Image (cartoon, rainbow, N blue to C red):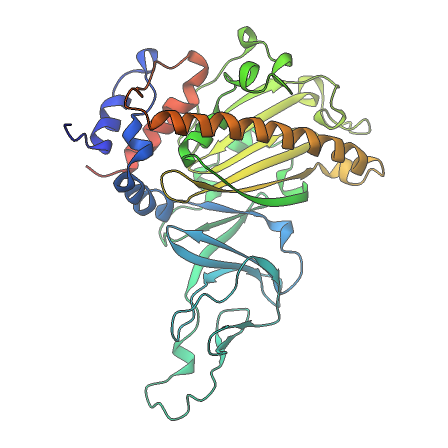
Length: 374
């Protein structure tokens, strides 16, 4: 069998104009070598989402994540400042914290070196006889972290422009919906048996809704009325209008700021490379993706309410019903995306032509290709 370089195959694919576009080559999903390139040139050089800023409300609240193999802590310090730092002890390189929680100090579970919430080394037992030891020089390396519209965005790249610059066009689209004020209600972590790009592409297009989601929301979709506009350099999008069959899908009855179709419009926003947001006038939900080898993806899955509904006494009941629907839709997506991954293992797997409803997938492929060297 002749070896095909995945990066070269991808560049050849995206060189074709959209009107004749095909899906990304199989090797781009299945190759360990290509994933290593993505980790180095995509994930290590992009803004990645750690979830919602309101998940870290109190001093000492923390969560952990991984960026291109680098363990990271995100926390609120004692002054309420959002920080990110390395999650690796400066002594013998143990992981410091796992999962999420609240802590007054960061203490290494191996030799009890202790760090303040700003990352500075607070104490190290039995080090007084080592003449090379300098406590002031052994703080946890800081990592860039910002609150962008209520999303915690983290990057290993010291020179990357901030999200408000790279995603500035989003204000023109959805600025009338105050994402920074939405209130998170749930946050879960999952791991699926599929490639991260398969799941990202699945979110980006609604072409699959009638079939994949036939048991839930698919019957309400009319492909003939669907369009996929051209996206922007940092994200793609499409939107649909919903009726009042789901109470939280439309603007709250007391909301007088939203008028006309804006009261019914649902946005699907894909922030490259791996933040996927569904935003409505009543609620939002999101996925943050982290590759775990070519064939698995770790998923941060969360969601919550528009501030109008967050203040409504009946909102918890409405959201409980909505959460049941979101979970069912998510299960359907898992089945569809895991079948795609399984199909890619076949010797007969071959990428097909894209529908006009899959423009976001084509733009996503071009975005990735632009970042892979060669």
